[in-house]
Amino acid sequence: MAEAFQAAAILSGALFAGAALYINLVEHPARMQCGIELAATVFGPSYHRATMMQVPLALLAAISAVCSWWFDHSMLWIAGALLIFAVIPYTLIAILPTNNRLLRPSRDRKSRETHQLLIRWGRLPALRTVASLTATIIFLIAALRP
Amino acid sequence: MIDQLLFMLTFLSAITSGLMAGFLFAFSVCVMKALSRLPPAQGITAMQLINVVVLNPLFLSVFVGTAAVCVVLGVSSLLMWHQPDALYRLTGSALYLVGTLAVTIAFNIPRNEALATVAADSADAAKRWQQFLREWTTWNHVRTAAALLAAAMFTVAVRVFAA
View 1: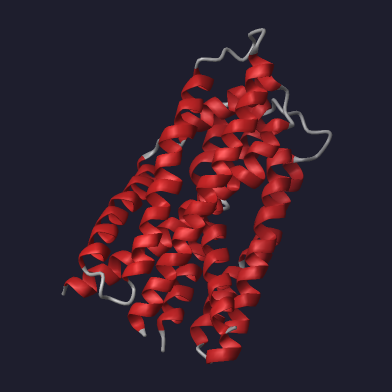
View 2 (view 1 turned 120 degrees about the horizontal axis):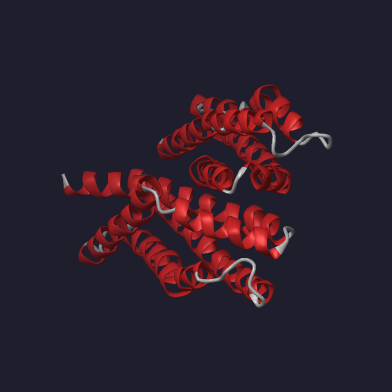
């Protein structure tokens, strides 16, 4: 049972980190090359789907890590769980306000402000990538302990 | 010394193949579904740009670097078959090399290259875009599952080694 929770924490953490890396490395840079209007158009559906994917993965990783701690009492599981869970409040506090401004129905998708918001948004998710990758490495180290 | 090196490479592969699984998972559950909701001309343009941007040094070093490490792990597991983690290292390596790398080369890259020749405003663009979405996404599911299973095998291997 403990091994199942450990595997769930490691694999969901790695999936989250890989998806976050994709957003940083490929999706947003590609979007910005499409031109501002198309970038702002694509942003909406893409953001909603990414949220639907990433929130459950972060929760699954955090809950599985806490369950793993219950079995082996290693604080590494708690450290990793806190780190990957932290991406949820970080998203709500740091990223959501920019998202909401970009997704406002009245927004002029060709405007200079939209361009600035998209550039700003591109910098914000990097912290999620680093946090989730670090959490995954911590989970893997915790799983090695006898 | 060699055992420690193999352990480090297996640990690294567990991380990087898991990262690749997440990277490809984003396409399967998020990107392609979002692009399929756009008008075909916009979807084609966005996918063509994604296929250019994805060829950056960091992505390629993780994708190809993991494959190179898998070759080392696969060969070493055959040479040191008596080790308890050898079966897991071999299975993980085979899953990544066949299910992720070979599938990408044989099925996803040719479709990317074909899409690159499609003019977004051409008469048959919509039909070719629908075909691309269906076929490319199916093979992406396959390589995502293979990378995730490879990560699981490498994780079991480091666990067995450490025990």
